[in-house]
Length: 353
Ligand code: NDP
Ligand code: ZN
Image (cartoon, rainbow, N blue to C red; front, side, top):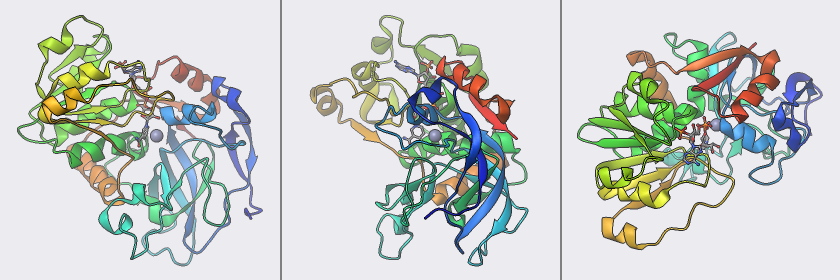
C-alpha cells in the first residue's frame, strides 16, 4: 500500500511518452519506513534505459511511470534506522534501490548486489511490500538509505549524477575484467556509458584505450577524453587492421544491428568482450568457432556493487574526472527526450531543478 504523501514528477502514461509526452503531475511514493530517506532532487541524468522503459521496449512497462536513475539530491527526511546519512547531506541514487542485504545471501555478501534475486530497480519495479518504485524525473524521491551514496565534496552534482548509472555500469566491468596497466581496452559506442568507459579505462591505468564507434565523427572528443584513437566500424577493413589487438572490450552499443563477429575478432587470445548495452532485439547470431579459436569470453554485466559505486566516486573526486554533460531545466524534459531519441546526446543530458 503506497503512502498517501504526494510527490511531483514528470510521468509517462503510455508508450508514446517517449516521444516527449511526459506529464507533470503528482504520484504516491512508496510507504516511508525506518530505513528510508526522502530527498529533494536537484539533478537527474538521462540514461538510454529511461527511453527503453518509456516505450515498453524491454517488455510491458507499468504505467504511470517516473523514469530517471542518475539522481542527486539533498536528504530532507530520514527514518530512525538511518545512521550513515544526515538531513542536508548530498546523496546520489543509481539504478538499483534495494537488495536483500541478508547475511545468508551469497550475492549481497560478495559485492554482487545487482545480481541479488530480490533486487529492486529505481523505477518500474516493485518493492517487497508491493509498492511501486519511482525514479528521478521528479522534485522529490523516497529511497532505501542503503542504496544512497554520499557525494564527495569535490564532485559537482551534475558531474556526479550520470555516474550513478552510466558511470558505474562501465566502471564495474572494466575493474572486474582487468582494465589497467599493460592492457589495451576498447569501448564500443561513445554515448553516455561509452564516454565514461574511455574516462575510467584511462583512470584505471590502461596502457591504450580506443573508442570503437560507427564513424569518426566523435574523434576530437574521444581524444580529449584521453583515448589513443578512434576506430570507425563503417570503414571497410577495420577489423583486419585491428585483428587480435584488444585485451578487453566493453560494448555499450544500444542497437542489435552491430558487427558482433568483427568485434570479437579484434580480441587477443583470452580476451573478453563485455556487453552492457541492452538493445531491445536479440544480438546477431555468432558461431562458437571464433570463441574457441580465440579462447575468448562473451560476458554481460549489470550496474555495479555498492562498494564499486563508492570507489568510483572517490576515484573521480581524487582525479578530477569530469562527466561530459549538458544541463537543462527539468521543466524542459520533453524537449530533451526528443533530442535524446535523435541520438544527439553528447554525451549525457542532465536535468536540474
Ligand atoms: P547512448 O544512446 O548515450 O549511447 C549508445 C551508443 O551506442 C551510441 O552513442 C552509439 O555510439 C552506439 N550505437 C548506436 N547504435 C549502434 C549500432 N547499430 N551499432 C553499434 N553501436 C551503436 O546510450 P547509453 O550510453 O545511455 O546506454 C547504452 C545502453 O546501455 C542502453 O541499451 C542502455 O539501456 C544500456 N544500459 C545497461 C546497463 C547495464 O547495467 N547493463 C545500465 C545502463 C544502461 P557511436 O555513435 O559511437 O557508434
Ligand atoms: Zn541507466
